[in-house]
Length: 456
Image 1 (cartoon, one colour):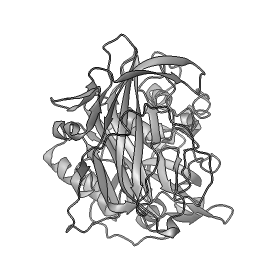
Image 2 (cartoon, helix red, strand yellow; image 1 turned 45 degrees about the vertical axis):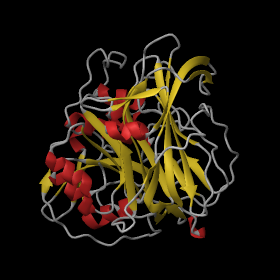
Image 3 (tube, rainbow, N blue to C red; image 1 turned 90 degrees about the vertical axis):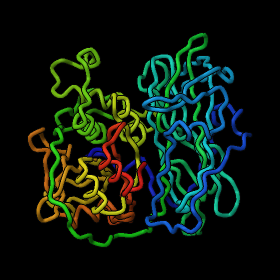
Image 4 (cartoon, rainbow, N blue to C red; image 1 turned 60 degrees about the vertical axis):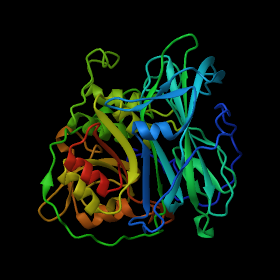
């Protein structure tokens, strides 16, 4: 989000709320199925308050409960529509258009969280050709033994010609609520937690065609980050900088205001585009032909358009950014949390930059020159003193994007869950949220670094 925006529409680590339950539109056919269960080793104590889990291999896709979906092997195993399970109508809430779609579903095994969670964020990687789209849902079990409803975590397509990419507001059962892209326990102080979940994937295509989405990765990050205004200081352990392209969101101010008011709010897609290009992702002139040719860095405009969430009315939907990155050949993306700057050093040492989410007052981050209720930037390295080298898109131009921020200040504003805003009131922090984009076939060193921070 932009440094100029009002307080975030996203609520993280929420207080209790009361919102009417929204009715889901996905077919209920898979709801009654009883998929198998993933189990954690009961003798293995969790090493971190974060549990990222994903389904990515042919064997894992075969473990799910499928209706009309089939698993495919190959270099990137996934699931596709085989013979559709049925046909349904969907009325797009943002256009009012009703269309008929064939659908098929895949329901994951139950994943038992190693850390009973106060929050869960799902993310996915997929190819959705024109005439197709997908929906991701989550259903879980609370620590009191009761279950959640099926919550919609996102309705997504790579393009925007078939449906408007969207989160779904108004989903709650009085114990938990969906805030844009985040499942959150309404009152964590009661001790209530989510102990397990399963994900349901619904694939849609135009009737009478053989089109299909292909989903290569489906996962979620559950966490129970303790409430804290300050976090322990880590010890510097790396001096290294990655050569990541530098783009400013500010030079796009006023461009395409239908996407969250224009470029001044585009910190998330601008950060995404930097890392996409670091990994070699490029857009063709044809793909960029819709952008005004007088605009510099048209790929940033493209990233804003194709990460835009029509319900959230912004480009900062976390899983939509990860999914956008994965539309580039050879890339995958996840949303997770990291536990420390040491985690970031582990990734940087393996050549993997990260996009971090944080909120802060101007005085809390020396050299930033602004305060923000929510902002994304790209961490690309560390100085010899251990300070953070960041490509900060909230800069007046591309040449000013590279910044060095004091280690202790950056660590605290990124990892804390509570802060004081400009009015002196207690507000939330993201508790270490980040996007990680990396190759579809990472090197052994990269696999080891990702595993060290809980990503497989």
